[in-house]
Image (cartoon, rainbow, N blue to C red; front, top):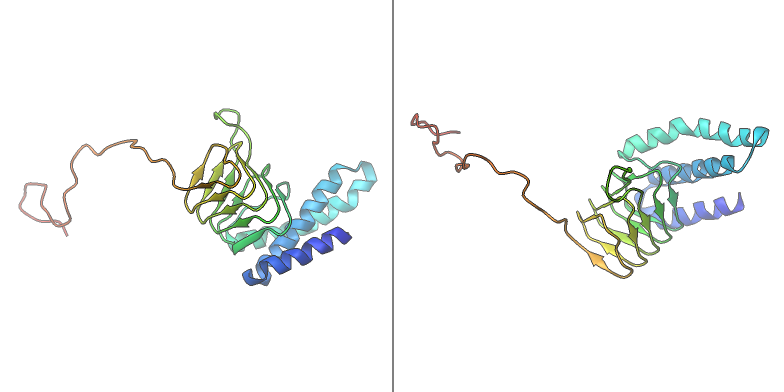
Length: 196
């Protein structure tokens, strides 16, 4: 319990600017994660207190997650001194994701897993000191090395080497309109009336 208190202290110091509600979400995540991991290591009656506490925490935790529109399951592993730069707004973290220490995560970030039907099944592993920009996605069994930077709205589906910066998402044409699009107000119907 002493280490959990020191982690909470670090979380408050790191995320103080995000506000008390964001800190409560992170503190509740830490306690829920502690309950889940401790219950796995116990058998019989010894696991009961952890399971009861987890059940009591579930409803307030889900309410906190809904208030930020985020999904951060207790089974995900989040390291120490992780900064959620703009609170947790729109953040999605896979159940199997692993996040290192001193990572900075902006809003609307997705750390998503893929299943066996995809070419790269698994969940992301984020190294220490990584920065993940707003709207970025790291999808599948991707390893992001220490000190890497993932730019805003970038999509990483392959490993990112340490101390590397990645930006953009590869765009490709997946369909084309069958008719040319006319500029607004031009008549393409042939009836002589312009569109509004």
